[in-house]
Amino acid sequence: MRIKTMAVFSVVFSLALMPALTAVASEVADEISRHEALAVSYEQKVSQQDALIAEHESMKADALKAGTFNPKVGPSLDYRKMKNHCDKLIQSAKGTKEELAAFAKYHKMRIEELQGK
Image (cartoon, rainbow, N blue to C red; front, side, top):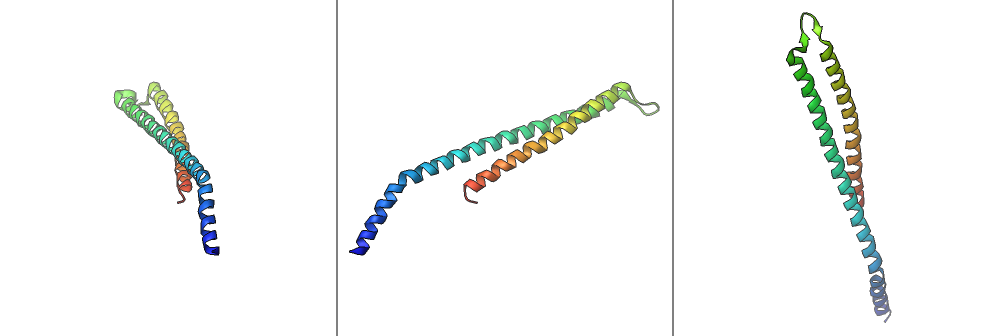
């Protein structure tokens, strides 16, 4: 008799907890989705920084090929301005890229934590 009572109590207790457990699971799933969206967003922004870096590396190389650098005289004022412009943007974009990549990594880590990994 005592075993039956314990079994019935266990079933009733489990059923009483079911809505709460379902609500927690739903909140965790929502939080995982939120972190996934943020990680994807930051990864896209990292790609945008890669494109900006490539654009200005190319721009700097094109300026050098365009005759703005004379081996006998050295770089022209236009080339030096262009190189300075590109170098500043490249340096800034690389720093921004590192920050964005760190944010993406953080959100992926949170996903793994929420999934119990």
